[in-house]
Image 1 (cartoon, one colour):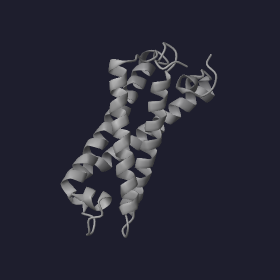
Image 2: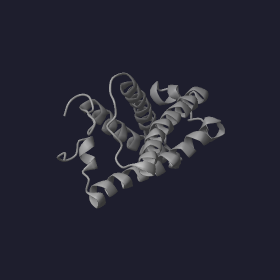
Image 3: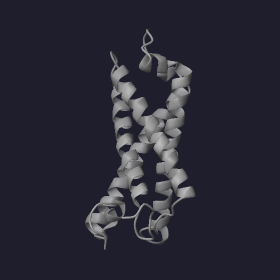
Image 4: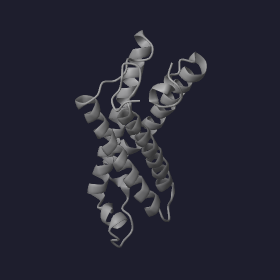
Length: 176
């Protein structure tokens, strides 16, 4: 596997960005839902959420720059409407996390919670639900969960039903 992608497989940089971002998004979603459900002490979960979400946003931006400036994507798996659906889903898997990062930054700036979470400032955490970006952030989390479920289901369908070794393009298994 080379650093850059080929017409049939993703390169090392794209694979590393994909799986690193995927892990950070899962941590951000899990810690975000945990922080939302913890009434008493949400600060530790919220710290993890902000850190993982911020890093996922930065890696997503880096991924966009990588595709734009240094790499090309392999050809789409499938043809016709299947390829169009895959392109739309992949575009949403870039746009939605960037929107989540933007609304998260907005929440931190409007609430002033960054000082409490990371600098030890005293006082209770603010009521995030009272801030305008919170609704978009919550909706984005639900949309992102749905997109991730569809993405994983499509990858498993390709791997287990079609047996076209699609996951090998992303670093799992031998390529055809």
